[in-house]
Every structure is written in C-alpha cells, then in structure tokens.
Image 1 (cartoon, rainbow, N blue to C red):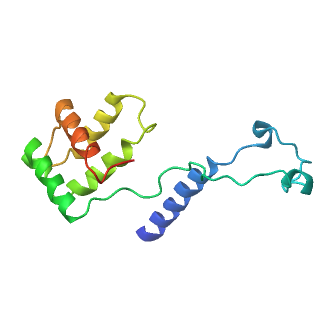
Image 2 (cartoon, helix red, strand yellow):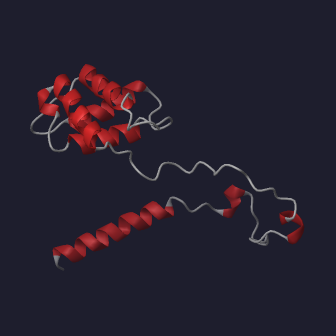
Image 3 (cartoon, one colour):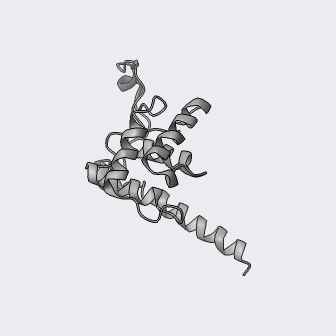
Length: 146
C-alpha cells in the first residue's frame, strides 16, 4: 500500500475517533428512545430569543499585525535571542490561545506547555522563568486579548 494511502487512512481513523468522543448515549442525556427530537409547537411558542450567542470556544487564533509582530520578535529576542526565530510568531499565537481562561487549570501547566512549545534545535531548553516571561509578553500584547 502506498505511503500516502496509509497516511490518509490513519488520518480518517484519527478523525473518526475524535468525532466518536462527541457521541453521547441517550442514557447519559436522559433522553428516551421514544422522545421526539423536534420540540412541539406549544414548547416553542414560549421561547424568547437571546441577545448573546452561546460560548462555543474560540474558532481562530489571535494574530499580530506587522508592527505587533516586530514588537513581539523584539520582546522575545530580549528574553532570549534564540526565541526570535521564524517559528516564533506561530508559537506565540499558540501560547495566546492556550492562555485563555479554562485551558490550563494552573499556571505551572501553562508554563510547562510554553517550555515545550519553544524548545527546538535553536533553543534546546527553556526554563520555567523564561516560559513565564514569554507568557507575560504574549498575554500583555494588544493582539492577544481573549
């Protein structure tokens, strides 16, 4: 079997497994097999429209504009010159998204994430204090307001 076909099948399995995690049995939701999926006219006549959309999570990762990117790279370079590489903006965007309330229950969890996110060949080790400085830089940036 060609390698591309194996990767495609593997990706399909991953997506199918991910989607299966959203399936909820009727016994868990309290629904019975005989309940109707469509509300009756009597129940819909009393519904009031809401003025706010339900919170369903962020669908896009915040992104700095050109001047904010320059400031971000300068800030990362001031923390550690090896942090301001070609992947820095992408990594900082990920840190911004992960810093959203509820993503990590503790500051240590976010710090550990940042340490892993910024480690590579140019920066083989990121200390906890460096990770905390990166978090402070990114979360205080105007482009990362969640």
